[in-house]
Every structure is written in structure tokens, then in C-alpha cells.
Amino acid sequence: MSASASASVKAEKTDAKRVALGEYVTLLVTDQDGRRLTRTMRRSDQLQVLMDFYYSMVPTVKHGEGVFNYRGPEINHDGTRTPADYEMKDGDEIRFFPKVELVTPVLQDFTGRSFTRTMRTTDRLQVLMDFYHAMVPSAGVAPGVFMYCGERVTGEQTPAGIGMKDWDRIYVVPTVRGEVGREKKSDDDYITLKVRGPDGHKVYRTMRHTDEVKTLMHFYHSIMPAACAAGGAFLFCGTRLIGDETPLQIGMIDGAEVDHFATQRGIF
Image (cartoon, rainbow, N blue to C red; front, side, top):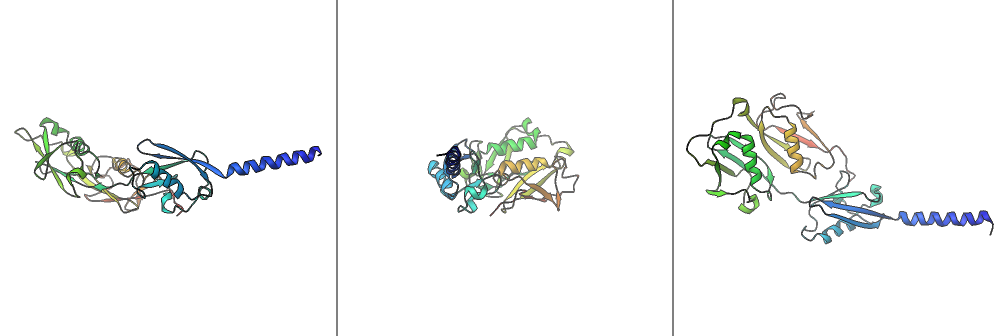
């Protein structure tokens, strides 16, 4: 065999090896509990194979629940698509977000002030208590108890555990005689806003008129991480919010709605 023929055969074998290697891709699935699951699959395999793999490895997650995100788009909307369809490469990460169940309770104190905050049904009520103390720092002068349906609740309990529903009220009752001093006027001017997501979810939060709107944005990100995995824009009355505005500056009123839109377009 001539040198040129030998080189040609060697090149063909190398090309064939590259093609064979190119048939496979190793992907990483991560979740909010710190799991990192790796799976090698064919580029032509349906991504449902990868999702089924995750469910089999994490039996505490019900099959079919949650959202799988790849660089923004939710891939579980169409499990028949393949790694090749997304041009996935070795080491690419698919993020899993669990199903989120929300509830919106209202805190009311003895002065008549109300504070609304959406939370996950599995969050500890301490989240709600800390929120109240952050909104009313002077409440620390006279410690109070939190009452729901006539019974005292603790920070270790959850909305799901006590059967809480939207707009249920938790009352803040002082444990010492005398009224807690009210905040300064500028700090006592509260407004409750809501963010509507592209999937119809509504998230509510009370804040001060003088707080920057990014407080609301960060809150939405923390409650709805899957919805924000693709990035997004917050719009009020058709204008995109930057975050350094305040409700007072842009004329927001109690109950005003902010819309959240994903900025990365999915392919389903």
C-alpha cells in the first residue's frame, strides 16, 4: 500500500471515530437541593429519557412535576425534542425546579395596618414574621405573638401545615400593655403591589412608597426561580422598569400590577 493510500485510510478511521464520538453527549442535571446528576445519551435520544432518569434517581419528586430549564426555555414542554435540536454540548447543564405552590396571607396588627406577602406553602412562617418586623421595626419595642384562627402560631410551622389559604389573616397581638410607637410618616406609607408572570401566577408584596422597585423584582425572583431562569423584564403601564424607581416616583397606587415577561424565547 502506498504512503498516500495509507494516510487516506488512517484519515477515514479518524473521521469515523470522531463521528462515533459525536453521537453521544454527557449532560448534567442540577436542582435546588444541590444534586448533580450526570447522564450520557445519544444526541438523537428524546430528552424525555433524561427527565425520566432524574425522576428515577430522585423518587421524592413525583414523576411529571416540576420544570426542566436549559438556558431559559423549559424543555419538558416537549420531551420528544433531542439534544441535537438544542445543539447541546458535553457538560451542558439542565436545571430542575420543583413545582411551586403559593399562598398569599395577610398580616394585620393592632393598629389596623395590613401587610401582604406571597410565600410558598412549604416555607416556614418565620419568613412572614421576619417580613413584618422588617416593615415595622418599632414592633420590636413590644414583642407580640402571631395568631391564626384563634391559635398562636410559631415560626417553625408552615402554611401547608396549618391549612392556610389565600387572604387568610394572621393577627399580630402585643404581649405587653401599651401601643407600639408608629413609624415615621415616610415609613408608614405602605403600598401592596402584585407581579403577574407569563404563566398567570400572581405574587403580592407590601412595600413602602419610598422603596426601590428592585425590592419587588428580587422578591419575585426568589419566589419564582424557574420563571426567571430565562431572564426577564418587568413592565408597568407598558414601560420597562429599571429597578431604581420608587412606587411614589412612577405613580403606583395600592394594588398596581407589574407584568413579568421572559426575555429569552423558548423553542416550543
